[in-house]
Amino acid sequence: MPRPSLTPDEIQVFRGRMCELATRRFAERGLAGVSLRGLAQEMGCSPNTPYRYFDNKDEIFASVRARAFERLAQACDEVRERETDPERRLTEMGRAYLRFAREEPSAYRVAFELDQPDSVAYPELVAERRRAWGAIRGAVEHAIRCGVLEGDPETVSHLYWAGLHGLAALQLAGQLHARDLDDLEAPMIEALLRGTRRPDSSPLPERMEKPR
Image 1: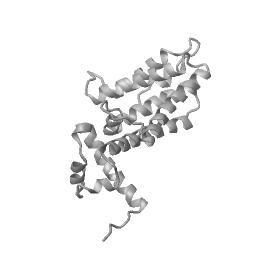
Image 2: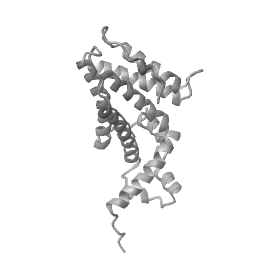
Image 3: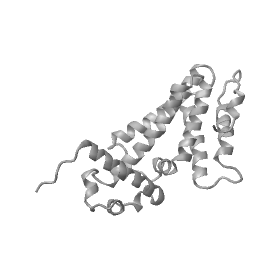
Image 4: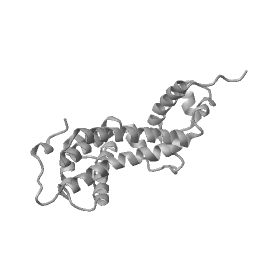
C-alpha cells in the first residue's frame, strides 16, 4: 500500500520539531557529531522518516541556521520599525542582537558555527543571513546619512557586527572574567559607536543604561 501523502501542515510541524532538536544537538556536538539516525531515534521515529522531510543532514543544518538568522533579523527589524533616532536605532539593535545570543544560545552557536558546508545550495539560508546583515548595515548607513556617524558604511557595519559578535561569543564560551554580558553590553555598544561618531554628535545619557 502506498504511503499516504503528507499535508503541508504535517510537513511544517515535523520539520519544526526536528529543527528544534537539531539546534540543540548541533550546538552541543557540532555538525560532525549529529546524524539523521540519531535525531530520528531521539524523536521516536524510524531511521528513514527524516528523509521524507529533508534530503540530508546538510539540509537540516541549513534549515536550522536559516531559522536562527530569521529570528535574529526579525528582532532587528522590530527595532528598525520602532526607533526613528539613528543612534538610538543602532543602540537598540545592538541590544536586540546580544539579547538573541543570551536568550537563544544554541541557535546563536549554530548560526555562527565555524564548520559550515557551502550555503549556496540553500537559498532560504542565504536570504535570511543577508536579511540579518542588511538590518545592521541599513541602520549604520542611515546613521551616516543623518550625520551621526562617519566612515564607509560597509566597513563600519562590519566593525559593529564584529564587536557585538565578539562579546556574545565570549559570553557563550564562558570567557568573560568578573563581568558578564549584562555588565558589558552598554559599554561595548557605546565604545563601538564612539569610534565612528562624528565629532559634533554626542551620545544620549540613557544609551549608557543597563539593558531593559
